[in-house]
Length: 277
Ligand SMILES: [Zn+2]
Ligand SMILES: [Zn+2]
Image 1 (cartoon, rainbow, N blue to C red):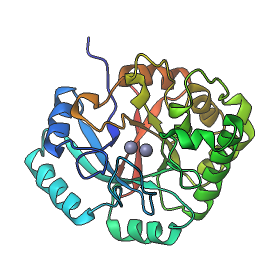
Image 2: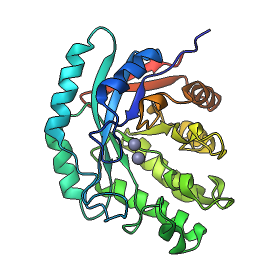
Image 3: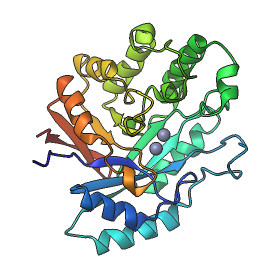
């Protein structure tokens, strides 16, 4: 029996600096997977540091070309799948005004705010982890996230809240919700107070050899629920067509076991609740 799959509200195409996926292939893969609705969330990460394997300004976004392509496929696939126009915006303290203006002018359906960097370093690269102890890095990461969502506020959900746990040095078990619960609770409290939600990100569940937890880890999803959090969206963070809605069956089980009975979709930034069937 086909299990219910919620809409995939986090995916990238060639409009993002780290994806080559044609938009139409992401759509076709979504339809094949049985999805009735998706949201593209292309990267905008201003003032990104220069990295060895990426061109400068790799995460700038040509929003007009993105919009035109989106509108073309929205019309072409009308009646087959609902397409939404979103963005994943990278937070840093040196581009709060630019990010705020970008969202104000962008006419998006949905905005994910994500903390991809700490002190201009990207956790994907080993120099990130060599800068300090793993414990201090996690502490700082959550402190900076809390600070950034205080200054940049025009978003709908916080992306993959414990993102850096994806890239922690192999074999390191420092990270757990319990260890950083005060900082994480402060972030969740702020989201709830401002009617914002969590991006439940299944990306790493596809890395079956690494035994990683989704972002957020289930303890955070449960804590968000217990604190009164309501708004959740499901996201595969797919950068290729084969990863659309990856492990959503498992994510639905996890989310249900944390007590959620509803998920959300967005149109022009307005949230709508749906029963988690
Ligand atoms: Zn991200
Ligand atoms: Zn993403």
